[in-house]
Image 1 (cartoon, rainbow, N blue to C red):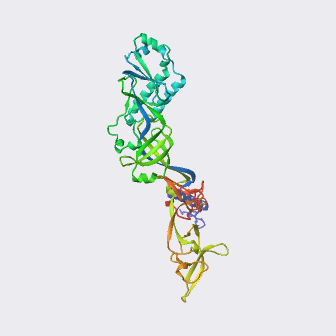
Image 2: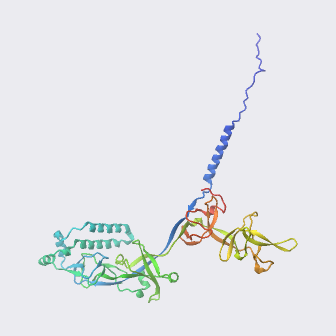
Length: 476
């Protein structure tokens, strides 16, 4: 049986080669470009900018001084148990009751048994006590634990003053009938009362010695309310003048720095208070140099303190505030301004001397980019490439309206000077702008306002000048 074979000569075989999809190719190119752009953006060093602001920098130097006041101690009139009427650091008038002395100790027991003798404190008085407790809690430090007891004694006196037991009309007669002997002591002078007595009440600026500041053997005595005292012992001191001084040691360097400064700002560290004071540098009887700050306020706040920490505010400069990292330097040729030439079309430059092939000399005008001009020099941009125009290193330039090679009328281009500045990027590329420093700290610098070829408030400058160069494009 014969098998019929099909004729396959007319069958067209399918084309199995892949067809190119133009759209897919374009999509892949765009996708790869986006991936490359994102990768480049992420991995490249970011150029951050800073907006120039108006600000100031305060420089402070810390010292410890001894307080000197017009003060005198007052001794107890008799022996007994003492109770204060007046808060520590409060001003009193002549005749004001300062404290009472209970000779038998029975007064405190009697007052506890008769609360009607004590009047209720007002809301203002309670608010005052709460405020003082709040101030104490905010400023308390473990290193100054004794301040806790000082505050307690002060509040005891405050509570006794606010209770007004001395206003009880028949208190004298009642206590006399009960055989309770007590005495009320009044102020003989007006002034500020302090219950801190340390033996330095008669100290004067000239009697200050370096040993005082070592505080060896120094002791502050505070008579506590309710304590048994002996007649004739100091129980409080009275500060009779609002003028007082703080004396602190100075070395030769500090003496020279402050010799011509007579008015300063003083910042008291512990209380966060700032005041104005006059400053004098003098030599005491021990031959050492000291600074004396004279104040006419705040004597009440520091009435119980002898050694005081403070900062001297020596500078408070205002200007344009920029970060230190923005500062860079740029070199410029310095050429005496007498050599500068201005062409008829207003272009500035210099007359450069050239040597021709036959050995003769000629003069040509060379336009140059002059960055700034001061009283003596022109600051000329140093060309960075061969294609840049302007005078170059080792060129000889000639003063205008002169000729020949007289050395007095020629200048050899070569000396350079670095100017401090920042990169301004307001136009999208780095432009060097000069700054004139006024003051600085560890992070920022204050520069002068309205300087030629300088910066202004709200300008955008590169925050880190080390990662860019002059003329570089920057995308903000």
